[in-house]
Image (cartoon, rainbow, N blue to C red):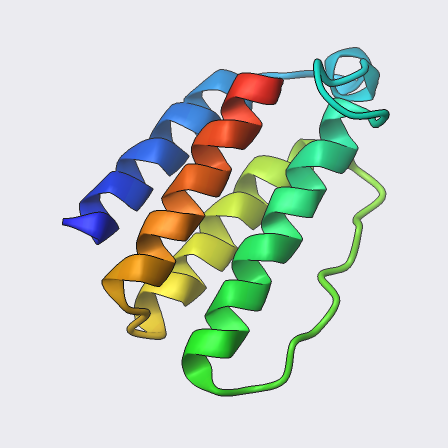
Length: 106
């Protein structure tokens, strides 16, 4: 069930941000002292870290691409990696909570 919740949370987030143009990405997030793009990239890194932990591999820095319009795709890719890693239900629930919290902060 946690995989379904994570996939649903990611679909909602991508539906919210998938059409954004650069000015919207550059705007400040409602929490923290960072742009919306920085907040979503932080989420991408967190999910990538969870995937690395689930695989038993080293954590790697996810590159911050020049174009913020790629962020929705990065969210999808790291989520797919996490699901493919066979993460346990607790890890998937944590990832889903992170996605939901990020969505609320945008």
